[in-house]
Structure formats: structure tokens, C-alpha cells
Amino acid sequence: MASLRLAVGAVSLALAAPGLAPAMAAPAGTAAEPRPPREAPAGSAAATVSAAAGRVLVDVVSASPSPLRRKQVMDLCVTLGSDAAGETSICVVAKRWAKVTRPGSASLRVPARIRRTGGAGVRVALRQADLMVPAGPMRVAVTCAAGCSATPAAITLPPLIVESCRARQPSLVHSAQDKLGKAVAITFDDGPGPATRDVLQILKRHGVPATFFQIGRMIEQDPGILQRIRRQGHVLGNHTYSHPVLRGGEKRELSRTQRLIRLKGGFETCLFRAPYGENPPAVVARAGSMGLQTVHWNVDPGDWRGLNARQMVATSLRQTRPGSILVFHDGEDHADMVAGLPRLLESLRQRGYRFLTIPELLRLDIRYR
Image (cartoon, rainbow, N blue to C red; front, side):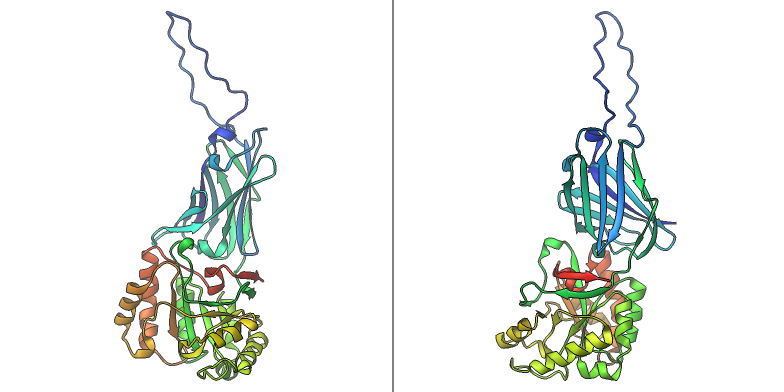
């Protein structure tokens, strides 16, 4: 049995049983009668766990008249159990952070939002993608020092399939801000191609979402692969139609591929990557006028330069930082990239990194299915 456990901080003050008064001092000359330890009554707080629109929400309401305060929400544990995955614990350790611990991996530090809801409630909100927990049915149990009860008894974590994304202020980015903790994005260019199916198998086996920047003429040769990419929870981006060096006036290069991604992939992308990494202001402005975020990278493993698997892994680990965007190429038969990718993913996981799509890494507006 697998379980996902969310711990949030100290709730005992707000959830202590009402009516308990301090013990009276014993009369002089008599021994004080030992006071039994306090036990919090069961059900003195109700916790509701839900998942929708890419968020996992935990709403806690005190049964006593005293409202919960954010700093008092401690010792609260939410357990989501399944038979498919190992045990994962999520502990809110600060006002804006949670610690995620999963079997066989280093712990993760992910953003968490805690806010008051109504008179006596507190909501803990986390992005489902940050937790890196498989989708599917989960049994729900809640425990806390004051005694908690959970509703419902089970929920379903939905698959994270992006329908569309929106860049509020399209610009050129090379990486994300490190305020998200140790998160990175794995990206692939020039596909779909000979390496795409091998890459998809590796990503599925390791539970890693990625972003694929597609060339229009390559889509026309293999249109069916786009739906498979999306069903696995990956995101599609625009990499022009014919992969030319852009000067800024080639709107049709972008619009043709935008249309193919929409028709064949069922996805309205907001992501663009210029061929050869050439990003003159006119190209960035052209993409921005179409609502597209121009996405560069700051880690180049060197698969296109012919580095072997060991060299690519070493280069990537040396360059990767929180917020990094790594670029690989699946449009050609890069056997060393395919060989080194599993080793790299596991090495990054052991170093405490989690993997996000570009829209999640950049915190763009996302609409999930």
C-alpha cells in the first residue's frame, strides 16, 4: 500500500478541547494529585482534502469557537493512500514551503500557500505538479494532535493534462526564478523524430513531465505522436515550421506550426523556441505579438555536439541550478542522449530536484483538462 502524507505544523492550541482549565494548586502540606496527560478529543477539527485544476487543497476547520491561526496549523497529517506508488510525506515547514519526502529520493522543498478561510478555517494549497505524485484514486486519512477527521474517505488525483497556457507578459526567458526551490524543466527540440518514442518511454518510466518544442514539417510526418505526448502529461511548444534562422518577419513560420499543434495535438500552446537559439529582439517581439513566451535554456548537455552519455550527464549536473531549463534533441537519432537520460534523471532526483513542464516552472496561466 502506498500513501502520501501531508504534515503541516502545530494545531494543538487552537484545537485543544474546550473547557480544560489549569490544575488548582494543592493545599499547603499535602501532595499534589498527579494530573493525567491531556488527550485531544477525536473529531475536534474537520479536514477536507480535494484536488482539481492542478491544485491539491487541504481545508481544516476547528470545531471550537476559536479560529485556527496559520502558525498554529502544526502536527496535521493528511495521508493519501494508493497501491500503485510508495509512501510520500508532505510537511509544511514554513509559511510558504512544504517538505516532500518520497521513497528512494531526496526530499523536495516545494511552495505551499496557507491562508485563512472564513471564521475558523485554514486552507493549505499546493500545486499538484510540485508533489510529483502519480494520478489515480487515493484513500484519505487525517490525523493531528487535537484529533482530526477527514472527508471524503477517498479522492482521485486527476492526470495533469494541459489544455492551454497563457503568458501574461511574453518575453525571453533562460531559466526560472529560484524561489520555486530545486525545480527544473527538461525540454526537447526538433521533433517529433527518431528518438521521440524512446524518450517518451524513459520519461514514463521515471515519472517525469517534459516540454517538446516541435517543428511543423516534422509534425506532418508523424502527426499521431502529438496526442501520445500529451496523454503522458507533457506539453508542446512551437519550434517553427522549417527550422530557419529567423530575422523577425517570418510570422508564417510560427503560425503554421501553431495551427498544426492545435489540430494534431489538441493543444493551444503559449511557448516558442527559436531555432539555433537565435533570439534577436525582432523575433522575441514577433512571438510576443502572437502571445508566445520565448523559451531559451541555461543548460546544454551537448547531445547535438556528439558528446557521449557520460559527458552529457556530467555537463548537465555541473551546470544545473534551481530553475534551470535543460535542452535535448529528439528530432534525430541521438543514441547517447537516450542512453544517458535515465542516469541524469535519477542523479537530479537524488540531488533533490523535481521536474516541471515549462508552464509550471514559469508559473504561467494554465488550464488543465
